Image (cartoon, rainbow, N blue to C red; front, side):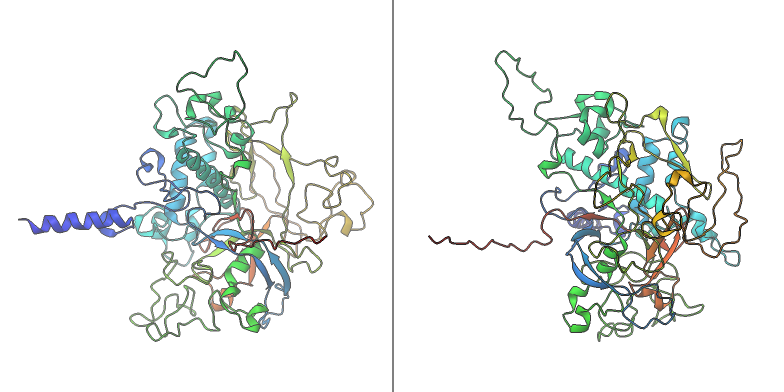
Length: 566
């Protein structure tokens, strides 16, 4: 009997049974952010769903962050005296958050999907794929040798479970939108509403012919040129047939489409707000001491130090960060954290919410527009700066406008990269008008990025209409990039020659958390920095969140019955 064969088969069976990634298996069995299985990846590289998203279950790869109140900002000594993180009390709603940063393997699957659906060799889509590719050249340094990382970090399997970097804020948002559609597409396929779109011989998922959540909810027959054969069935339709109506043909689509009111589809994925990210990172829920109730927590873990205090791991670092000048990993042999750059996700213990690497590894994009201090007089409930209120675009016939392959609109960013304003197959939106906001007491206009901070109400031109001014007043005179398009169709590479004293603008976005190249000071979740939304680095990644629908937690609260006495 060949015992070696038996041993090999036994290992294979164990690997398949537990469904985890083993080196001996030579392939990843599943990925956890959108719900598509490894077998379904044969079409375009999808993921596995262990359970359908229904009711209050956490979306794939996410954990629940129960909301509450906390002190946002720096509650330790302000050693820089910049008053950039002034403490302010905030209430946060419950939400779901990725337990790790988005990894290279997850992002490469996104790239594979985009390349298949919007092939770059097709002139209609030539700029779409390139707009989502990370900047791998962020690893270059004029006095350092890092060419190996520029060529291998994103796609080599050795870095598959490392956090993706080189992604701008704009690209991170595009990923969140894409993830919403893939998760809901998988939900409808699991529910038997949609057929497996990538296995149909009569259908090609390309260009505008792909699943889009908003388009489906608006009009399911607007997708795939009205081809109803993509639907297996609908939800039960209780509308009675009138007398004389023909019976539906066998095998035909019956019932109705899924609606928001059915509670089946997932809420939209997005970047966390700064308040949400800091609240999730501090995780003050783990310590009931008085100082921690007030928010006095220095790191994502409990304690004042970066080294482990347990007997078994005494002295080990609790995060991946730069320990000193020329010291990114520690002394080899006994004090090495195993990471000269980023490190594989889940290499360190999670915080009390179950989130990994909220301090260290990579810093992370958040949704907010940057301002030096948090507005003391601003909303103390789910604070966020960056709202631009929009509505669906309606054509002259009163129909919602859906982006078409032949009418793709592009925007040229300040760094010259071209990005699509709308992906084909998605619903176009426009800012709300003054008429839409007329006589409202909660907002007055669509663009609220600089509200109470450099808008007309804050200047001597408060009595003039914006249309009457040649140059809109700004509180922060950051550089204005000349936006002249040359004969080649690309933006001319020019610089603002005016004298400026700040880099803060309405396009600077906040990023939070320390990274592999930051010192211990930046591991404090309350610290905040900024970068233009179109730029990328080798130390900023991102993770997604989605809203918790319904009650803020799972505790059953039975209403107390009130007896009425007569």
